[in-house]
Structures are given as structure tokens and as C-alpha cells.
Length: 237
Picture 1 (spheres, rainbow, N blue to C red):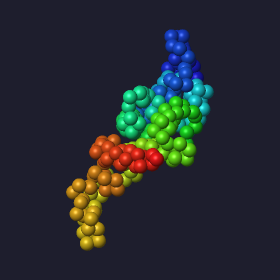
Picture 2: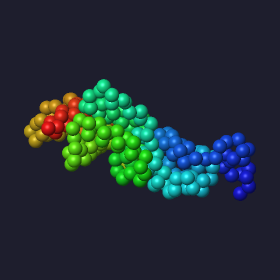
Picture 3: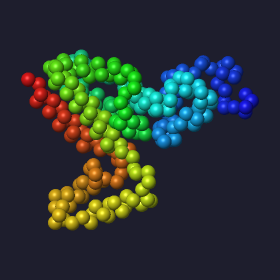
Picture 4: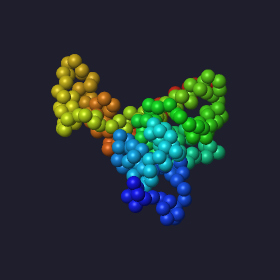
């Protein structure tokens, strides 16, 4: 393959800086945002960036490593608020909302955040800040570990579920079919559900047909966060 027939060569004119790992990961995030995670391949991203696939492998390794790095980048851009003069529970609430907002900006990468173990230490500064605030609030030892896991598990788990994608293999019109089936359940068998169905349908987990990507569950998140913080208060002796 001649130079003229290959991908847009970044270095052909010597006009651009060498490719960096950060640039590749940022491009992967943008590509996943626009085209979806399934469309993100090394070849497709290389074509988008105007480089050869080997250049991407050199900087980020395999595709799973690229996807993991891209998903980790979702929370990297968060500027954590100052802890000075702010109660720990207020601070945690603000951080939880910042994390949720970041995840809403990159919903196609969120499933990876909740289903893969971290493969790098990029989140260490974030972890340190959370632990520092919790320790300052009075949590120590195993309680510190358990409460930290509760906070992180709540944010990542709750928002991952909120942003669940529609089933890719469902037939067209499945939403109407699901809604009709839900509204047709036996009120004698499911009295509480049917009595509250006007409030629950399309607004609650397992009874909705629109993802939080299009129909955010703001009020429920705020209530869940309030319950979480109240529970954490009860753990402090």
C-alpha cells in the first residue's frame, strides 16, 4: 500500500505532534459516544484518527484495554469540590451528582464501568479523596471499607441501571407491547402494583420501557441518595 493510498497520515507533513495514549483514549471516548460501544474497533478508530491500527496497539494495547481505559476516562474529568467548610454528607452528595452527570454524558461506556474490574490506577486520586472524607467523618477500619464500597457501589450501580440500554434484539414496537402487557396484569394477583401503576409505569425499575438516557430518573436518584446519607449517619458512633 502506497503512502497516498493509506489512512490520513498524521506525520506525513510533520505538522502534528506524535500520537499519545491520552489522544487515543480521548478519541475512543468520542467514538463510543457517537457510534456506540459495539462499533468501537481498533480498525474503525484508527480510520477515524487517520492512523494505522498498529499505532493504536502500540499506545493502548488490545481492544479490551482500550475500552477499559475509555470507560475509566468517564470520571477522570470530574473536578471534585473542596472539602473545606463543607459537611462530609453534603460533599458526598455533590460528588455523587457529579459522577451521575458524567455518566449521563457518556452512557455508551457506562456498562463497562459497572461490569469490569479496573485495569489501571487512574482512579487512585478519586479513591483517596473519598476515603479521606469518610475517614474525617469518623469511619475507620472495616467500617471505612464497607461504607466506601456502599458509596461507590450506589453511584456506579444505580446509574448503570438507570442508563440501561434498550434490548438490541427486541422487535420494533416492543415498548407498546410491554406497556400493554403491564397494564393488563391481574389486579387480584398484583393489587399493589396495579393500584400504583399510573405512577410506576415508565418511571420505575422493571416497569419502564424508556432508558434513563432519554427519561432521567432525577427524583428517584435524589431520594436514594438521601436514604444513603441518612443510613451512613447511623453508622457513625
